[in-house]
Image (cartoon, rainbow, N blue to C red; front, top):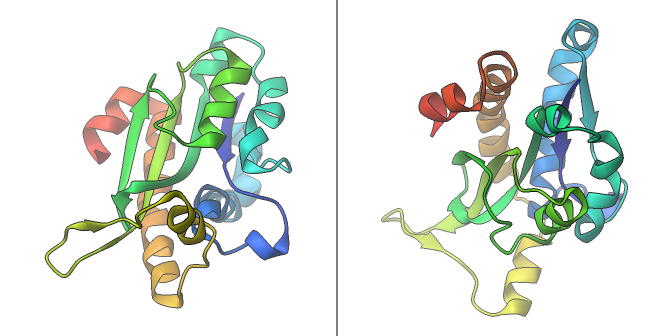
Length: 179
């Protein structure tokens, strides 16, 4: 079975926050695929654990190397500009606590992930990241503005296509097409 995980925090107060980007996008994909999912045998997971404990929700679904190969985790990345995505495989957490929790619980990094940019950019296109731990936390736990959600909605179409390619033709093909 294919497993598509959208990282975020449960609860209304986190619903439209930048740190819930994975959850938002995977919910959009699940809504789009709806009843088609019966044929595709995809398990959609938006963990009810908080971000830092995501591994607890993911680990019970991954029981073998094949399950690991069929796992795709979607999450926010403050090192990418809003509106951009990057598919990667077998990489470290990059400081993302939710991903770190999954890696620790699975005792492996050998799964596919889709990083979704949430960073602001300057008019010249340079990434504008908040400075300092408190500023970063305030930024990622801050809510998307309406125009930012529109950008995310548009990007979700591309991410949906990428997930389809990952599940049908493999991660390498998807990386060559979408990175």
